[in-house]
Length: 247
Figure 1 (tube, one colour):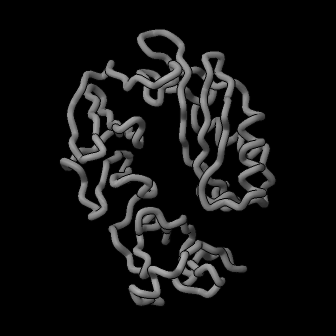
Figure 2 (tube, rainbow, N blue to C red):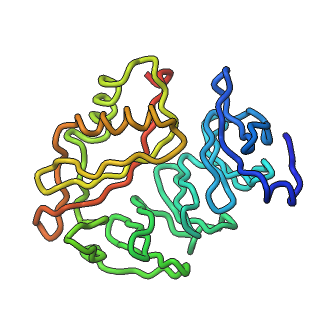
């Protein structure tokens, strides 16, 4: 594994790149290889770490190319001081030292919005503040969002028929030869289920991002979110990836 000195690392902008064999590594702003091509997936560096995939697990690596964490089934970038990892069907929040906050695992977890991240068990809801404090609230509690747009509600919106049906829809409308690296799609689900303000972030190229956006524009109406029994507008941010070998 290639290692670069601290002084040089501060000057380089490290960018994930895929070679002709479909393996990811990192190059600097001049296109010079800085971290070996060795990953099945590699995301952009956020707050000092990048998410990479080796075999069947996701890891965090440092700018020097060193593995900084153990393997997880799911790992989100460090957009903030805390992020979400998944393992065995459960989710947890970790800090930049990869400690699990209060050693708590959740059935559902959502990244920060208006100052709080949210973890939910079957009967309890917890709020994680940007300062790392985690407090329990009632399951009916929701963080108020301006303009009557929510990010977490009692019943979150979903594609008709659930995630499996959404994957079938995606594969049906994407060429079987197309591979989409891990990307994040942000959008708002209106009360009638229509999708608005669709944007795509992540390691995908601009052409692929445009294709993903067009795909979501073609989707049938989602089942809208509900709060206290009423339909509400909900902002969503979901990961998406497509690999022909998964079929």
